[in-house]
Image 1 (tube, rainbow, N blue to C red):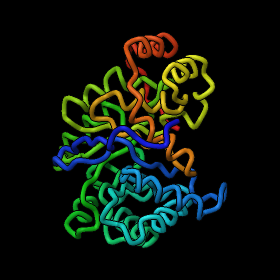
Image 2: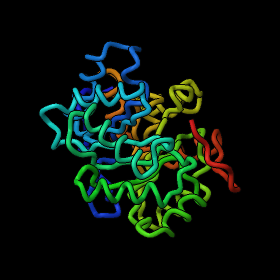
Image 3: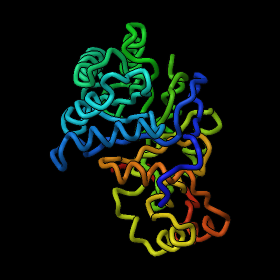
Length: 285
C-alpha cells in the first residue's frame, strides 16, 4: 500500500450547496475502552491531516464516550472539521432534542454541530423533531439537519412536512453485502440531490475475507477494505464513513480514493453480491 496518495479528497454537495468530503471518519465503537483513548484521538487527528475532515459520531456511541474522543481530536482545529452527530429517537421530542444537542455539544467541546441527524425513526412524530431542529438552527447550535436509517416511504413522509424539504442527508447501511437501497432509496435521494451517507461500508470487517474482494484487491495491489470502500465511493452523491480507530486503518481507508474499480471488477462484485431486483426492507445494524 503506497505511503503517498495520488488524489485529494473529493467532495459532494449538500442540498444547500455546501461541499463536504466523500470519505470521512466514523466513530462507532470508539470510547468503549477497546483500545487506548489516546490512540483513537491520534487516529482521528491523522485522518484530518489526510483531508478526511468529516467526522461522524452519535450520543449513543459509548453513551457519549465517542463524542468525548472526537472532542479531544478536534480541539484547536474545530474550523477544519465538518461535524456530524445524531440524536436518539427516544430523545427526539421538542425539548428532548434540544437538551440532547446541548449535552452533545458539551462533550464535543464545541458550540455547533454542522449536521445533526435523527438516528432512526421512533415514536416521536417527525414534525416535533423538525420543530426542535429549527429551534437549534435559529440558535446557531446546528447548521444542517438530516436523518439516518429511513426507508423511502419514511423519506417521502418527511419531505412532505413543512420544512422537511431541507433534509440534508440520509445515513444508511451500505456495502457490497447490503445493496437493497440501490433498488429505490438511492435513486429517490439522487433525484432530489440528497446525498446518502454509507455506514458500516466494510460490514464491520465481515466482508473482508470474501474471495472476490480478495481477488480484486490482489489485481490492484490494494486491500479488500479498499475494494469495499471503492465500491461505495463509485456512486456520485455517496459519503462513506468507515470507523478509523488506528493509524494503519486511517491510511488504508484514505488509499481507497486512489482505487478505480473497472468494469470487470464491478461485474465480479455483481456476480458475488447481486444487486436487488425488487423492494426489500431497509436493513440496519
